[in-house]
Amino acid sequence: MGFEFDPSDHSSVMWRYNIIDITGKLADLEWQNSIWGDSEASTPYGLRFDDFITFLFDDSQILAYPLEMKESLLLDDDEVSAAIELGRALDAIIDGPEIHENDLMSSPGWPHVVMAAKELWVAMARRGSRVAEL
Image (tube, rainbow, N blue to C red):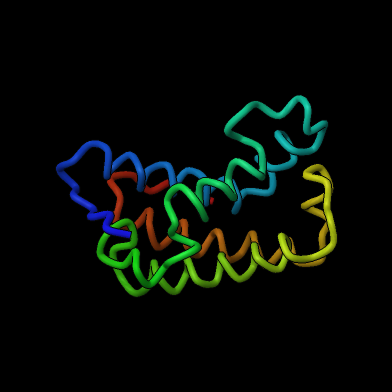
């Protein structure tokens, strides 16, 4: 892993803001309906469900290795616990039957994803310089 969070380093701060932004979108059904409710082909690059999964599991690795990310991108036990729960919820969707992006919100496991995303969003936004409301 080796990623060290440094609040004075602009790139470290941007990683956290991107994670907060993505988890906020995963927690927001209204946003999801407005973006994913039509056609996957019309979803802008960077806002597709697959883009979020790639960022959270592969790029930032907070869901792939939440314990290792403590005190780097995840700053405390609340954030680590919430990341573990979101990872489990998303794994259940990813490892389940093939679901088209436009049908994600009707998946039986989707409410768990939304709730887990909200928990991580709240935990991380609390430590950021901005806190939005859902």
